[in-house]
Image (tube, rainbow, N blue to C red; front, side, top):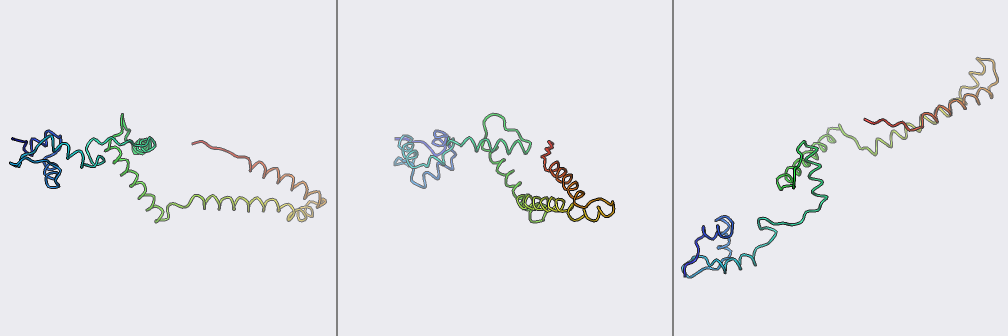
Length: 179
């Protein structure tokens, strides 16, 4: 009985001749006595011994969040993903993300980037120190100002405290800027 050649079987399976040669070497093909390939037997062996994850046209489901991440990354890089996301687009998105991560790491090493939480904490501490200094200011200067003006120190201190507190309350109101 005459079987198929490696080229014929490769065309039959829709794979390369090299894949058929690897399958022959690994014993995944059923061969006739003359060395030709038994298509039916080889198809059964090939299917039973091939990892489906490694097969072409593998249709593993990809989480929607991963696809959305690929599209977002491509959009940020100026490459809009049209239609279904391809493997090449996903690979491109992965390379873009790696490049962005390397850039951020390099900027941190150069001291161009700093930790956001640390900065927020320092700004908060600075604002608190400024507020406390202003709140204590009327008590420190009221006596000196009262002597310069010839008025009662207690009254001037209360007036100054009242105005400073109003000013601090105004500064504490959130002011949002939208860019």
